[in-house]
Image 1 (cartoon, rainbow, N blue to C red):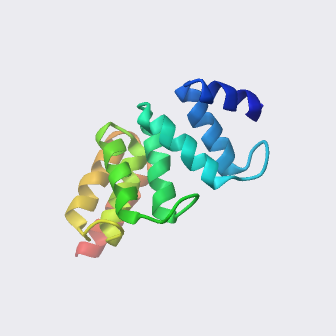
Image 2 (spheres, rainbow, N blue to C red):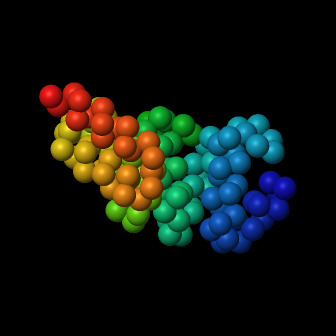
Image 3 (cartoon, rainbow, N blue to C red):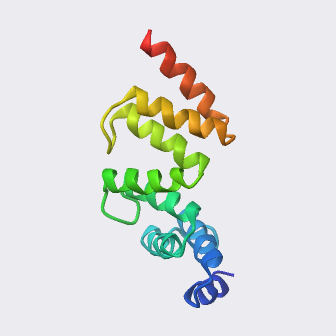
Length: 136
């Protein structure tokens, strides 16, 4: 299964790149391989996959398979969120709320949580509520 995905991904199939990277990061099919997953996420993101950009941002934030780069991770998340990725908007809101890779800003956190909520990310409503409670 992974060999077939690698063949398709190597041939430029961006869906295969993303699918392979997710399998590698989760350890499905053959043990986890964070470094290879990051390579495939990067390739898929460069090929236009917004979901791959989100995953790449998460890898940079945590240093999974790459050197930890929280500002680079936030940059990936912001690009994905600007293209409509709900989970990226939620994670970006968390970055602004915590001041992780971005300046601490409850206003920007709220902005991105609202974007995530508008795109159907249910967890964003709790984040907005908790943020509002802390502002009081």
